[in-house]
Length: 237
Image 1 (tube, rainbow, N blue to C red):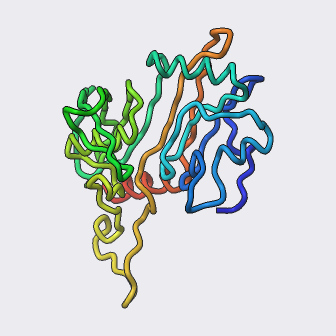
Image 2 (image 1 turned 45 degrees about the vertical axis):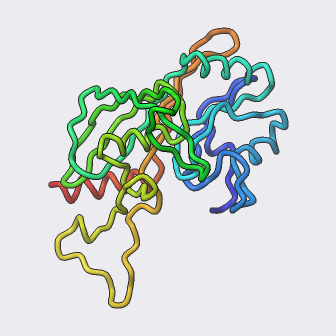
């Protein structure tokens, strides 16, 4: 990834908060595999900044950053009280008609950094809605009420419609050969997935600033997610 310019990804800014559109494949916090992460880039300009929440490295989209301790306290309280509204879009394997499907399944964090659904886990609630059904995939909206690690990913696995490309939780890579009739790769060449991550994007967020004013922000799809939807649209005609 080329050097990221903070100005390019800002969706909203005031004296207390930044809301940014995190690119895919950039860690929110420090990552052993990379010298770069979103918080490090932000702190070059705002040394007191703290992220209000996290997105997985592969997940793109909207993220709140508090510029100072007071704004961090304010947003943390809203997350704790479940007052923040978040909307995600995901492309999942298979054709699924989810009509305000509520998944209320506890999630347990494992020592290897993954999670599983388990009666011993913490209460976790997500609401799902089908937006568009393609030939072999579905575009789904997810509204997590709680904010557990990998919550949307594991809840979609629970529904037997894992996120495309999310091999950790049962998703399959999106291959052109499975979408386009007659598509063949070159000899002795292994086919690359159409999108090189799992297809999850944090689209919208809704919270309040220090004075109680409502802040709403929406993050446009990144190029790879938009290209995936365009390809699914073409091959579903």
